[in-house]
Length: 213
Image (cartoon, rainbow, N blue to C red; front, side, top):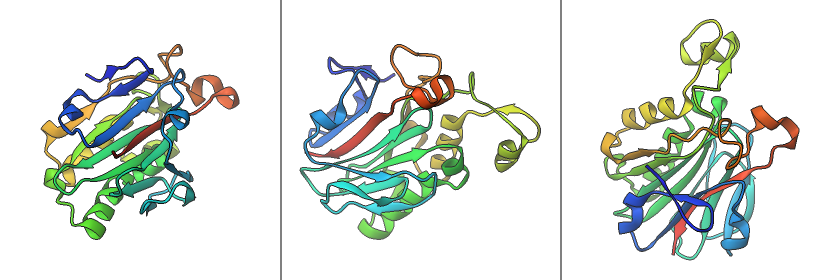
């Protein structure tokens, strides 16, 4: 279970042991950019592309995941139903932030972020910890046949994107006991979260961030 702090940010209590790590899943009541001075994001395009921030800040091109190992900066993705995923390599102190909508999930964006961590920094997936944040739940996410077929299903179905991401991370080598899932549905909880499916063009966006202090 994630915990909500006084700034209206959800945190992973298991990560409190990493005193060098800053992280959080924002809500509609939090202001992550104002809290985090040096922040890197991307223009999200529902892809499987990943960029290495390398200490840079601002908008670092078009992609849907960022990887960082530079102290003093944070990386973030924005969501309003899509699934935010944060990854931590505690041994090498490498982190990633992932934006996983249905297209990114079908393209295995979380696995690509892991591959980037491994290729650039030598991360062993077996030592990585993951947090899957608030997003639209299976309770509210009904999709048509064209989306369902991307996940090997037929007809109109309800998708559990968080569960699919968890399965993909396990297949990539993560320890199931080190994958933490919020279980929070953005569409159900209007007081806390923005939801594009619920609010359409009036929906705002929530930041999920991670970085090295």
